Amino acid sequence: MFNVNNIHQYIVLAPMEDVTDLPFRLICKKLGADLVFTEFISSEALIRNIDKSLKKMRFLPEERPIAVQIFGGNTTSLIESAKIVEDSGADILDINCGCWVKKVVNNDAGAAFLKDPDRMAEMVNSVVNAVKIPVSVKTRIGWTKDNINILEVAQKVQAAGSQFITVHTRTRDMGLGGIADWDWINRVKEVVSIPVILNGDVQTAEDVQRAFATTLADGVMIARGASANPYVFKQAKELMNFNTIITHPTAEDRINLCLEHLALSIEYKGDRGGIIEFRKYYTGYLKGLFNAAKVRQKLMTFDNFNDIKAALYDFLEELAQYETTYERNN
Ligand SMILES: Cc1cc2nc3c(=O)[nH]c(=O)nc-3n(C[C@H](O)[C@H](O)[C@H](O)COP(=O)(O)O)c2cc1C
Image 1 (cartoon, rainbow, N blue to C red):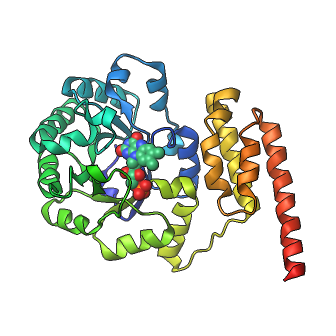
Image 2 (image 1 turned 60 degrees about the horizontal axis):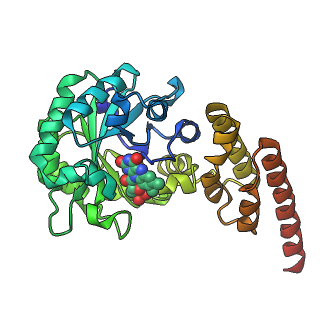
Image 3 (image 1 turned 120 degrees about the vertical axis):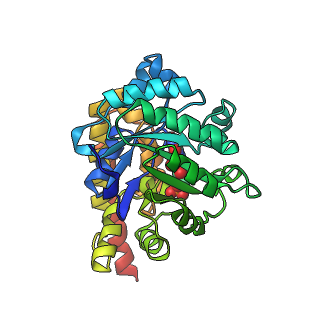
């Protein structure tokens, strides 16, 4: 069984709906993520055996340790779905108490729990008592900036049996905007003894290093930074271990990784779903490359692997020609 005491300077892939699916988790794992999270899965859908939700729970042994995240506003459903997650062999059951979107909070789920820390703690305790695997909570620092209650929340969820806590250092009303306030991490560390994972605005290897240097976080969790650049896990470890980043992926490296990821996507989702659902990742893989927007537009129209591969390799050649011309003229 996964021992949460192992959580020390962990670099964690965040849960992201429609992003941290099995293929993307495999890519991030290969590039050094210490712990990966599934996207959130509706507890109601799990107990109703909805195929799409059951598929979201699927993972491979090489992804371990893996946290499967559930959300919902009804404790009975959360308990039943937690048992389903446990039966799937997941290492950790994570409960979403931080999602800010209306359709979630209006059902008393996600960040809505922040409005009533006792309700959150009772729910967590009921889930903890229903399963043997470690249970964790991912939440935010508060509902609004005038009502930051993470210190109370953290103590209550620890007492309820949560084995670690991930704190997205924004309030619910900030959504994904504004600046995350990492200062809350040390304050949380003062009041709890369970591991605390910092989340919010960790985008680059330098951010990871700074987060560990300036806070007592036991781990950092990366969301948007990972979809923009999955190499961030490897680069962060290099920076921490050798004080320099060794991995500087070339355009060719990035395109090859993109194709490896696409092949996994097709393997696990089939030709059509695998290609259509993959389209959101092109932005990250092609970011900053000359004429990326043009090639991305073209890629959106293709529905088979070989056409995509050919277009990406043509693009690589164009890039090489552009660089040669640029060097000759400068
Ligand atoms: C596309 C997207 C989907 C997300 N889905 C989830 C989710 O399913 N569960 C969750 O706890 N947080 C979810 N989040 C929030 C992230 O896990 C994370 O808390 C937030 O993006 C802040 O981290 P960052 O600044 O590194 O992006 C999502 C964020 C994004 C951008």
